[in-house]
Image (cartoon, rainbow, N blue to C red; front, side):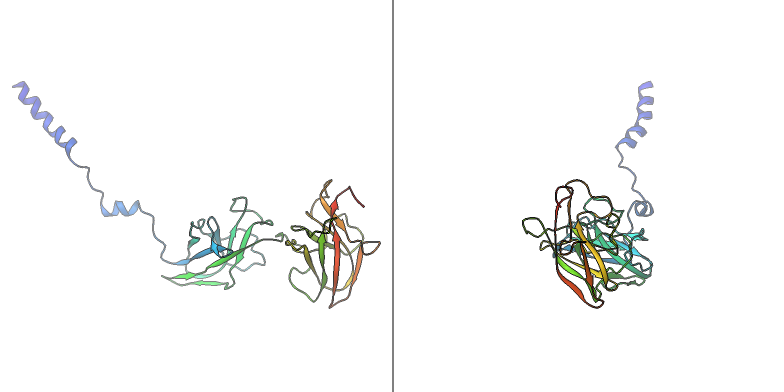
Length: 261
């Protein structure tokens, strides 16, 4: 009798253990799923025509000269095929794609990072639809910091080439210009970083006398041995520029700072 009672008590437990787990309700399943964006911006990011992974697209609600501040929205890093997507509400957005060599998603861009400002800005997002923005990023050759003076083409400026002592062109350096003979400070005007041909252009707001040099870094005091040079076409390293014209064929030779004349 005792055995029958024990078996009777064990049956419900065995049945419960053998039964399949209860199925979640449809509402529970939906709660565990990631919602698929219904509208926004999407596209493909490339570099030199090839899919670019690990880049992000940033969306700003307001236009800015260089979009230096934090973005209002950002995409996840692009996939191996370069694809990206941003979930956005209806409205207009200024889009910028970036990939920092450091792997960070914040901070100022430095030469060597990749960027592309969407040429079709502002992009418009409508309810229930996606706007496509395919962007081919470019390598940054200029620092993103504010300074006085023009940063784009003007009718006045200085053009030339930067070389080493052997006469070979030097890439990844700046030509710098000052409005006075005091060249121990942050320059008043700079070129973009040079490419492989060593050529530079400094755009100026007006003619005048400018003192010229070239170096790799432009904010701190030159370090011993740093590539550094002053224009040697005049005794005081200056050149006269006429308004509406360019001073051409201005060559600057780089030497190790503190090791040459």
